[in-house]
Image 1 (spheres, rainbow, N blue to C red):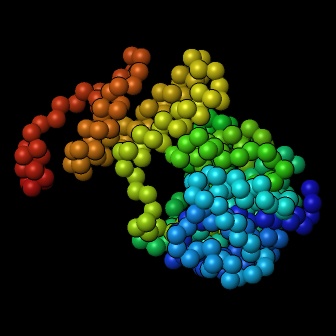
Image 2: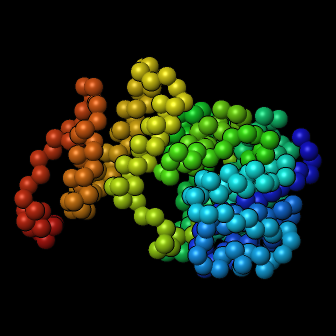
Image 3: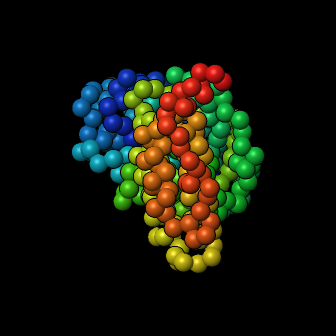
Length: 299
């Protein structure tokens, strides 16, 4: 493995002028310099592109009509010339040693490493650092592991450029999870637990609604079907586990008395094929709403 690999940074951008300057500055402040910084402007209507162009080299702006984040990331992959590609969203930031620590990790990693990713912290609307998941310490992830859990935050990931993998463009939900699930089959994933990336929380982000949950589930299930032979026992087990993941938000919606979304998600789950494993939560009796208001008042 090259001792000093060149790194291309890919920043997909759509109307992110409010945060883009801070993001680019955090990339340029790295103790291990990036070879190039590619800002792929995905049809922004604000001044994101001109703001990025004001930095000059090594920042290069690629403009394209709005086609979605996956298409923008893929364009960056195709234009990149570095040995490795590091992704960062246009509203996130890196700590100064992020790339250096990833490069150091490469020297200690097996030759088949496909990705080095790090821990991250949240900032903005909420300020806390998430706990380090125990499963992140693994290297040998499977497609199944990553299609079930969002193990890799894209803004923390550095991947090998020679890998021909691209982000899926047939969907706009769950693309990151699908990409890293497929990447896990092309090599090992190395995790650095230090919180080296800041994930910004703000009002313009897509909020997790039932519509989002349904689209996310359907995209991942489509990826499972595209990936393997449907109808096998292992695929059936995976399907059931994916269905069961939606029971937690269903219970939360009931607890929070968000009845419209609760019934929408319950209907979605009720229409699934549970094959004898139908959860009791889908048959729970729901009382008149005034009874819950009384219960909440006295509890």
